[in-house]
Every structure is written in structure tokens, then in C-alpha cells.
Length: 282
Length: 167
Image (cartoon, rainbow over all chains, first blue to last red; front, side, top):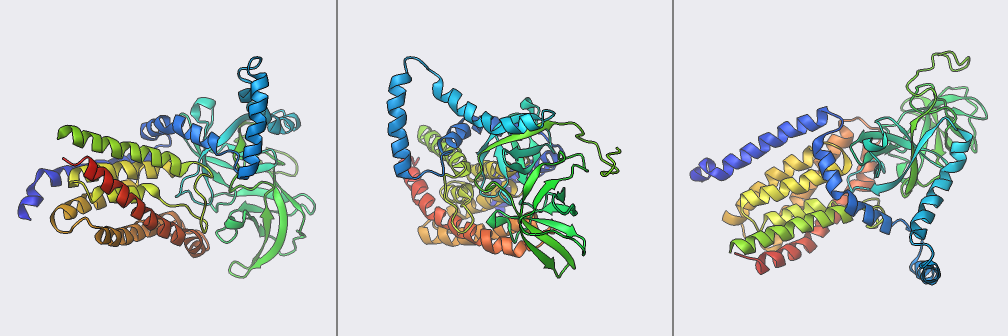
């Protein structure tokens, strides 16, 4: 046993642990690092293939089978004419989802993206998207679907980025009730995240928030654009611990399984803090 | 002999890469009680019991690094803890305990429970999230149980790899 502690194995072990601790500190202190970029670049193609293979998650086996037969038939007819027909069609369908959003908000710079990975250790249904700094994605960029806000980019590397969803307590979005104009903060909760619900907190005692009201972002922080739909109020509750009211909000998408998204890389007012949101003074 | 060892390590490496990608593919593994297993943790432990301490540690580091980089851009808890655990496990399996099914399962139950509970402490308790206990009950218990169950499968897979490609 004494010899073991003097052996090369132990020296290698101690050296490795020391290097790992240094690497851990190093990778934690910088946002984008070579290590994660390398690993993600190596696994990116394989992840891309498997993510694409499972994108039709809502279909049953028989539906998939009939879809397959149909596509096989169509494929035979069109193969000679359109070599990349399906790729174009899929891309087109995804882009159409965001066309209305782009038309409504021409100032948004949208980068369409798909969910590449959902790791077992992801907290509050966060996920990895297939776009990174090479597509001008930066930390803090809002992530949206055609139905509203989904989350924000928390980490980036060359080809991928990690997204924290609005189901997470890490998220804080300045929000307003479109009907009653009550202001508050949308943040996730461990109590509700499993049911694809988030909370609209910090409501005043005289609030008029009701079930069915639509919650949108205020844009006061300069992180999220003004007017992004977050979800619909399903319940109004009283937090006895904090002595405040909060509303339970249901996003219009199922964030726990969503696959097609877009990242807003630029919009008018990004990074600017509105000092007075009522007058619009900045 | 060297060739067999090379192919064994190659088999482990391919196994790690494939299971990392499959484990993180959206909607591939069904969520049972709100969680999917940490496949790479189970894989690292079952490789470690058949190998010497240094190779065991290297594969532990690889699995830990991929686990850490799967949900963040930095290495941390899983890399360092799996390096230490796999080194100790590799050493013990060669000197003190037999790498049989019961010993491996007992080790897996202790290590996986401790490791994932530690992850919960770092990811939730220290950050001060409200209702963190609810998240533990709804997600972590199921994740711990599923990861332990994965160990059973990987034990036999890696035992087969080790016995087929033994020096």
C-alpha cells in the first residue's frame, strides 16, 4: 500500500486532478472556450443527424408508416425532377413559421434554428440549439417560436448555443398584462415547470390580472423586445411566503418538447434600458 | 496483446461517443417520471471496474467532460468527480474487490446517488431556487434510479467487451 502511494499511477492521478481543477476554473471564467467548441464541433454532425431523425416526435408508428409510404411514392415521381426537394421543403416549412413574425417586426434579425440536444442534466428543460457564434449568436439573445418567447441564450460556442427557457427561475422577463396593464416579472418555478407553466410574479396587491389574460414582454430591460407574447394566464395565486400575488402563465408552445425555434440576434432598442417605459424616454 | 488492448479502448471510446449523442438526442429516450438517465456516468463506472486505475480515470474524465459539456460550456463536477471515483474504483477492482455483478451494483448505487445528489446541491440548492426539493423529487430520484438501471446493462456490455478483447 505504501508503494502504491509512491507509484506513477498516483502521480498521474494527482497531476490529472490538478489539471482538471485548473481547466474547470479556466472554462468557468470565460464564456466561450476552445474545449467546449472542440467537443461540440466533433459531436455536432452526429447530433445533427440524430436530432433530425427524431424531429417527428408527435407521430405514432402507423402515422409514420403511412407518411413513409406516401413520401416513398412521391419520391419516386419527383426524384428525377427535384434532387433536393425534401431538404428545401423542410427548410421552407420551418422558415414559414417565422415569416409572420418577421413581417410583423421587420426590425428583428431572426436566425432559424433547431434543437440539437436535450441533455439528461439540463435544468428546467433548457436545451442546445444548432447555431453558434458563427451565426452571430450572442449570450442574452432572446429565443422565440412562432407563438412567442421561449427563452434566452445563456452560453455560446462556434456551432451551438445553450438556451435557458422561461420555465427556469434563472429567467427574469419584465412583463405586462395586456388587458389590465399590470406589470410584473415572468420567472420559472420548480413547482410549475413540469406542467409547461411559468409564473408572472411581483404583482401589486391591487392587481387586476385575470384568467385568460395575455402576458407580453415590456422591453424595459433591453434584453427582450417589447410586445413579445409569453403566454396566457391560467390561474392567479397568493404566495404566503412572500406575501405577494402571482399568476400562473401557460406558454402557447410546449417548451419541454419544442424543436423549431428562431433566435433574435438584433432588434431596435437591444441593450438599451428604458428609463421611462410610459413616455418611451430612453 | 497490445492490439487487443487498443481495440478494447477503441470500443470503449466509440461506446462513449455513441451513447453521448444518443443520450442527448431530443425525444429519443422517453422521459420516465420527468427524467432520463445519465448514461455516461453509468458507462464510466462499468468501464472502471474492468480496467487499471489510469485507463479507468482517463475514461472517467472523458465521460465526465462530455456530461459537463452537454449542459454547460465548462467542465466541473462530473469531470473531476468521475476522474477521482474511476481511479479509486479501478484500483480497488484490481486489488481489493472482485469486479462481479453485486459489487459493481453496490458501488453504482452509492456513487450514482452521491454524485447526482451533489449535482443537485450545486445546481439548485446553492443557487437558492425556490421549491428545489420538489424538483429533486420530480426529477432527480427518477434520474438516479434510471442511471442505476443503466449500470446493469452497461456492466454486461463492458464485461463482454473486456472478456472478448482481454490481454
